[in-house]
Image (tube, rainbow, N blue to C red; front, side, top):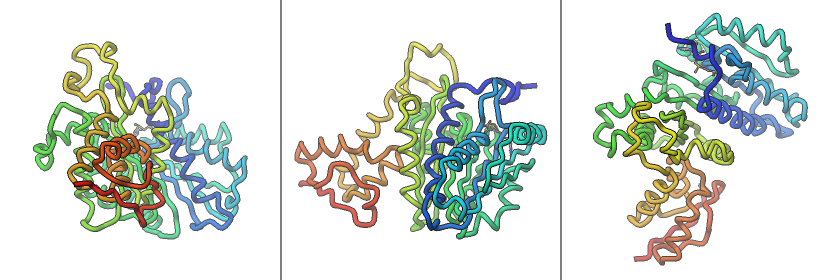
Length: 359
Ligand SMILES: C[S@@+](CC[C@H](N)C(=O)[O-])C[C@H]1O[C@@H](n2cnc3c(N)ncnc32)[C@H](O)[C@@H]1O
């Protein structure tokens, strides 16, 4: 029988992913709890694939990282803390793992005043069904962490549910094998220029999900790639609020270690021939350079006309607004465009400044 994920130490790629979950929780919580008059009376954080809380070496997993952030905010004191009811739902279909997690929660005293912990064995699909009420409730702010592995639980139907949930931000994990299933999906196969290029495959996966969103609906998807030895894994973020997504991307890119993982400048000498599923000979070495070329081409082709268009392009490519600045500067210097800003401002999405193509 294959060794269980939690019976060994987390590998570096998993640690990167967990760090991203934690950093996002760290940014997300105060948005809803810091104001003196919080906008939402309830904050509900769901970790649908919680695991037992720690790896074999005792390193904290996603549920304890979420609780650590809440504990630290409680200790610091956020203005709205006592005005919001906070619930953390920790679910995993494996009873043994939930039992271990419960033990940790009791023996190490993870109780935090003002925070209710709802820890039970539950399969993802059942959890979505059981919590439809809160997930559709506009009065509750929600963060959904979907750390699936192996079988892909975010089917088209599940994705369509996720985007219908009200006032919810979600992050889900795509394994290499899931990304590779996308590569072979008939609906997107012909759209992937280089099928062995994980960057293209991840982008095609996001495009695929984007097509499941009803035309005209305002919903933002972002992506972030993580290199785990020779495989590329993907995170996909979803929110109705561009600010939510942009914050996430800033968090991810702000950390050198994570950016180093994510832009996967492949150190080819560290990769043994035949390791992993990917063909590194055709893998693009630099996500950033690729992004810059694509943005430049889109602007030169006239398909980007405003600051908001640039912002959307950045978000959809998993980049922050800051990443577009060198391209804008260069095109301005070359006389290709005129514009009166240097870095697009996410707060100006509704009143964007023009990017004019000079004919
Ligand atoms: C990648 S691990 C999650 C790791 C966890 N987030 C951590 O920080 O350690 C995936 C977990 O999902 C659980 N799982 C697998 N299929 C599931 C399902 N359909 N519903 C809920 N949990 C599931 C497994 O038992 C496993 O603990």
